[in-house]
Picture 1 (spheres, helix red, strand yellow):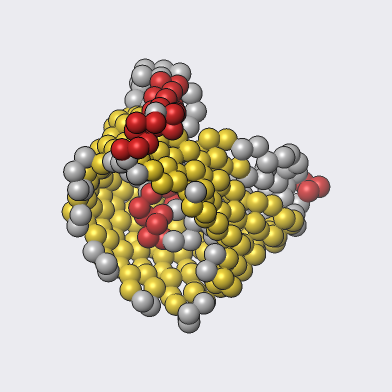
Picture 2 (cartoon, rainbow, N blue to C red):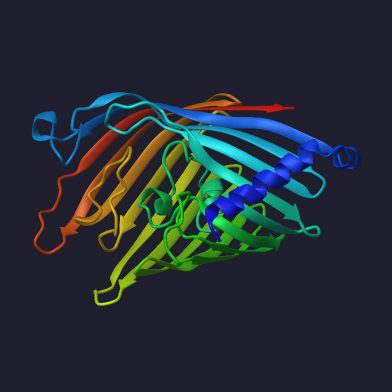
Length: 347
């Protein structure tokens, strides 16, 4: 089914909920506008591409908006609807912020702990891990950053459970873009969560054009008033008929430690065991396909208000052995002053 069908279905049901007087009278309707923005001042102290004279970005610095989100949620009876727009400054180039649709879905509660969902939304690959990590504004989770999985897809699925949780999704395997082939993706997740512990295993099997993909990921984390600690492993295989399989795997660990009511120390280390299948690009250009990258993130996060955070941070990238026939890149060193400003208003 084309992505426009899912989008049209979600939008049509939403419009019907608004214009049908009898429905509005029978069911309580609530709505809110919400979002946040991530402004940042960045400085590239050193980069493997060299300085501007060499066609690189070493020494470049300035202001940009890493992300801007604006969303609208509405609940009516057992239904829920969301539309959310996203925008961001172009990375290391001129250009204006162009918004696009990030979320567009309809969900329905089927009993106390089961939910059906259809439209454009997060597959069960790193959405809950991102919540546990808690510092998306400092940097994406490893699978998101290194493009091992997409943050959005268009399809439908079911999720449920309380302590033991599960999610299944069938989707285009095309992110939030238009569908152009017969390949599709099957996503799944099994997990266990309490107030202090979260464990999950997830993965997908998918086809896109002439390529087949399999991904497996495991995550375990503990948390408390002191902060949290997480350990992540992921493996991805990409195959194509007549071509040699391409594989990559990484291990990631992070910890956040509360230094007081308003300050937190954040440390993360991502270690690829093999070169990656893609280069991340965007705000953290890394030569992932040339050599196995290793990323160290250290940040101090300050809550200056319940809706405003600011965090000075450093991101240091170094590389393992280069693939045969290529030269090992020099290290990359990024410094940033990153903010997060949230807003929400009920209607």
